Length: 113
Length: 113
Image (cartoon, rainbow over all chains, first blue to last red; front, side, top):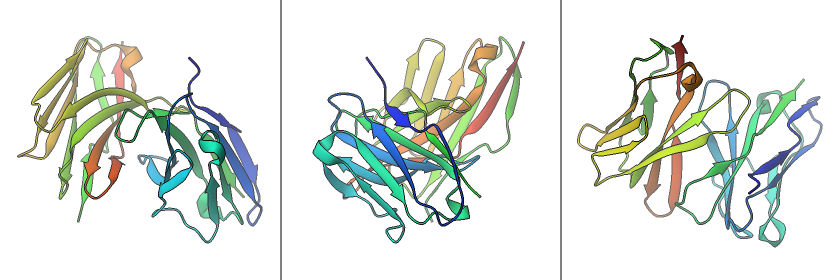
């Protein structure tokens, strides 16, 4: 069974540019999470989807970040415009249902210059 | 304030010894607690889950204890091997008005041959 797939694995952009990350969760998993992980820190939740509904986006900086999960499967996280402080690893995870074990993708390492 | 604390300093042990990692938390009442392993450049991988009404859980060389009075979990790896070298993350599952997982910053473990 394929795990959570994320792309790209690495992205380098200049500040003020837009960037998008894509996530394909494990087949059949209804819940999808986007996390941000800074060096030496644990993952911090940005947004959680249950099917196509964003049920927890309280930590998503909505002035520059947006996300969507069309048809309740794949998801895209976008930053526009990117700032230097956005440099981090962006992790996607999925679970069968909320409160079930989360399975993480490899992450996208973003560097903003 | 609410926080999760894991040893910020790396833990260095000799192969064959038992590694013990600590997770302390304040002002949370988790429904359960999980431990994840994270290797460099990869997403976290689930290892063990222990519920609030459980004292101890084992899986092969891994053992987790959970003391809700002390607000502490201990994670043990017996007969440690160099392949166990990684960062270990503690995660609290909170179910208060909506489900949420909060991660600690992790402890880096190095096992020397």
